[in-house]
Length: 212
Image 1 (cartoon, rainbow, N blue to C red):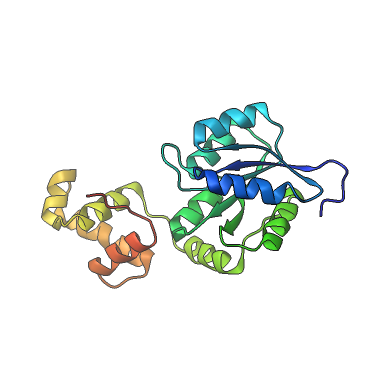
Image 2 (tube, helix red, strand yellow):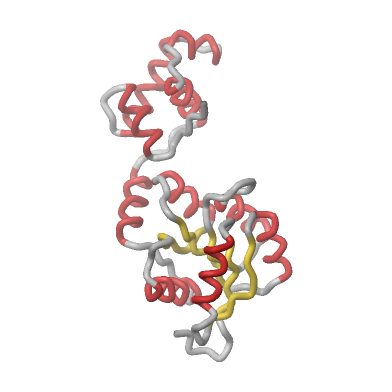
């Protein structure tokens, strides 16, 4: 546990009251850890960060209104010194990548053991990163792929909605040949062999999201 006489101060951000209560109860039983607050949404969390001197933020990524990634980005703007551990059920490779880019220092699945959670809190508080091996492997794989440009993402999203090259070209005021060239780049970056596979991989990994 934390050897210092000053406890590690935790702020919990999760939109499920049962998760909040369970984490608070569990963490407060450990010497050297103190839960200083909990929030069920982004704006409430940012307010608490301004009011409370927390060391560690336990943060769910999937919340209504303001996502965990948006909270991390806002913390950067605030120049907050609080170090964040993402606590989540399941995330796509893209969300893991975006969370790290936004400033997350650790990742834990919600079914993690109590011991691993304590290890993560202590490691991150000590200035280290804590990323379990399976999540680290997915992150490394995602970071090896070049980022798609905004135009490539736009074309890929339109392709996923069933538009042809001609329709995409008309919508974006570019030639079919330009659309084809963009799609070649997309397939190369995603390491796939055709358009259908490109769309499937992009949706599976959370690179694009298709809403009805």
